[in-house]
Amino acid sequence: MSAEAAELIRAHAQHPVGRDEAVPAGVLGRAELLTPTCGDRIEVRVSGDAAAPAISWSGRGCEVSQGSASLLADELDGLDPASIRQRVVAFLDAMAAHDAVAGRAADPDGSAGHALGDEAALLLVAANPVRSVCATLAWRALRDALDESGLA
Picture 1 (cartoon, rainbow, N blue to C red):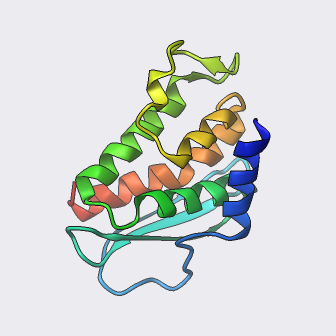
Picture 2: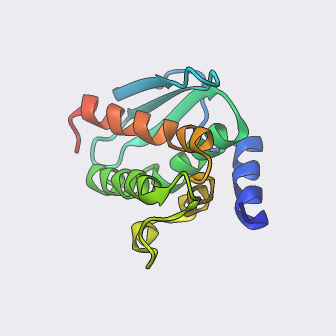
């Protein structure tokens, strides 16, 4: 992992955006996921205005899962539901496109990550299957929370 990407993830883990242990009023959807191999737990909530919902999360886990959840909230909070869904799908697809065994992109032109913001830093952990699960935990939970909310 590049030093810049590692620092971004570390900064988000140490100073998380959107982390709130209290469940906000007006929850439209929520989902909690666990990683049985390492014990990470993340709950993601979509609440407030259906046109531009707030995203909050709570949980515990490694630096990668916590940094990823913070990046998710920082990048997606307040976007419209269709844009949130699009970014979640783009991120999960980009992570899946990386060859976890060889640690290299399965898409040589790099197009799998072209629609991403700062969350693209997390693509560098895809070479490690355990870390990849940690990096996608909050994103998969947000996808499930959106499904529950019926927003997008």
